[in-house]
Image 1 (cartoon, one colour):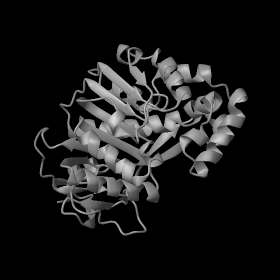
Image 2 (cartoon, helix red, strand yellow; image 1 turned 90 degrees about the horizontal axis):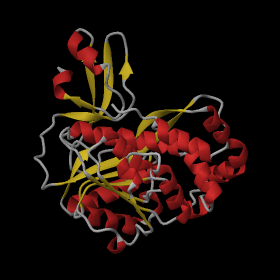
Image 3 (tube, rainbow, N blue to C red; image 1 turned 135 degrees about the horizontal axis):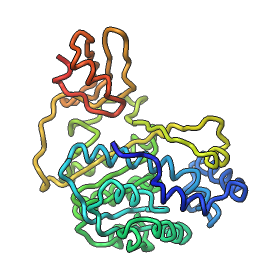
Length: 331
């Protein structure tokens, strides 16, 4: 598992540009805007808002994107992308996550509509590896796929950006990218709304010929009832400055996110995995661990790993919300 904290060079660069005493009002406006579901152009309207975003939101979004890229790397351990397309890039969060996880990345293209975000992304990139220092950071509207850079790209990432598009535009973008990128990572807020939108995008992607790599262990309809949603959570450490900007009293926060990782069917061979994705925090007891699962046959269910099977119990005890539980561990 990768370190889900901001890389030291990035954290230092953000801290230099984001002084809590100067950004308190901007951070408050940012939080109010996101609570009101305003798009970024309204919630983050100026350079002060962009700096506040980097200081208050970038640690959490970086952790969530890194957690998802880790799942891609675990599912495809031989994957070593050389070219990355980061759409709705903001300050370059996903680009930093990808280049940190995969030193093989040689080419990074960021597309971002906001001039203030592009300026900050370029400024922060100077603290990164050569692939970031030399990144192509360009203006673009992700709602207009025909204007996006032509592929092929080994990896495309849309992180916390699809949520701002209307559903038809989101579907068009994802279908377009299936023909441009070998693998596509989508990370969204872990809300019922965004899960529902992801399921619609998922359907469009499958119809267009994509394969779901994670989290879904099947290609059938989502089995969750309408009042439930699939998401995961990652714990984020807060610095003192981060706590001051967020108005927090504890040194951490839990970022909940929803995601999809898609790939072209021309890449590799799909495995027939047996088991299921863990949908909730595991429920351990002295005698067993109970898991809520989305199974490979497209159904929901529970699995229990008994303590009497010491090897399986020890392995299962290391699994967490969002991991895959194989049938081998279930006895």
